[in-house]
Amino acid sequence: QRICNNRFMIIDNFTIILSCAIIVVALLTSVLTNPFFRKFCEREMGNTDVADNDGNEKETAGDKPKVSIVIISNGTAEQMDQHLPVLLTQDYAPGYEVVVVAVKGDSATEDVLKRYASNPHLYTTFVPGRSLFMSRAKLALTIGVKAAHNEWVLVADSRHVPQSDEWIKTMATHCDDSTDMIMGYTGYDDTTTSYRRFERLREQTYFLRRAFRNEALCTKGANLMFRKSRFIQGDGYRGNLQYIQGEYDFLINKYGAQAATAVEIRPDAWLIEDEPSLTTWRNEHISFINYRSCLNGIASHRALHIADTLALHLTLLACIALIGLAMLWHNWIVLGSAAAALILTFVLRAVLAGKVIRRFKADISAWKAPFMELRCFWTGLFYSVMYLMADKHGFTSHKL
Image 1 (tube, rainbow, N blue to C red):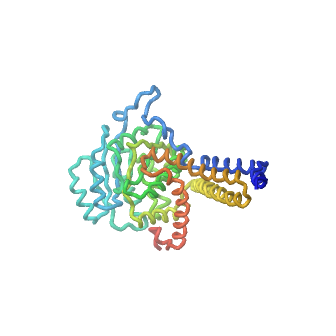
Image 2 (cartoon, rainbow, N blue to C red; image 1 turned 45 degrees about the vertical axis):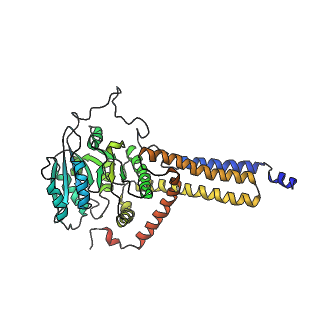
């Protein structure tokens, strides 16, 4: 038995190479093919103060422009009632207006707006209850932008609320001659399930990174600031009017990619979205599958996304397969190395995800992050199947 044990513990070249290889693969894939490791903002983990070249905090009042906030009624009247007070009490010295675009005939929302009618910041306009050949949300945003009295426009809808009364002030720190669009972070509220909050955070790391590199692709949520003149000169949503959803994605894809786009992720600039219903959640995912092929630059995003997903799954499969083979071979060194690689994969991914989770105060257990990453792939596959089975006429306003 001792001779047998000695034979099993022989450290030959094959054992050394295989053991080192699985450890290196686990280390590299956990870091290099991980969206939580890649830098997605200049100040993402450092000092969050906005400073000038002399190290002094920039002035955010007198030298900043007046701003128009365009809010489309894309939720319930209760959401509008809860969120309007925060929008109407923003701390922004240069001045601002809130342009609410509601659906004509929505009596509940109209009643809410009447209660705030005396507020000097509020301006209300309406969109027809039925819009032909154009998404109602896109039509509402177009009407709101054209109704805005200021050059700089912030857009969101009634499902979103600023986390701070300095939302405008923080976003407006980027308003200068060298910038045409500003992209902020949008998260879900604390009542939303951990998985949905994690998925939103993970997807935004991809899109914020693209915008930071001046390759703006799209966004999850809203929280976009841009020049009204660029929207008007570009004929608004011309080119993608037929798609019912994607109003914010098409906005940044069309105008952000052509402009100098700034990224703002400080907490005061965050928008928080109310928990979506299961139907809304599914529709958003399936609709994105439908219109994503029309987004400029989507191919490189999908290639990176697929590479990250494959790397994670193949690494885990390699570790599990090697554990099984090592047990058959009775090679305890390879077995230990494969087990260590498996643990290393989960630990590194949890640590890197935890850093970003804490940065965005997502209140998600970092140790669940690797499992949620795996779930993202299978959930996406499920929605792809649902899209294949869906009636494609349901995604377009052009029903003919």
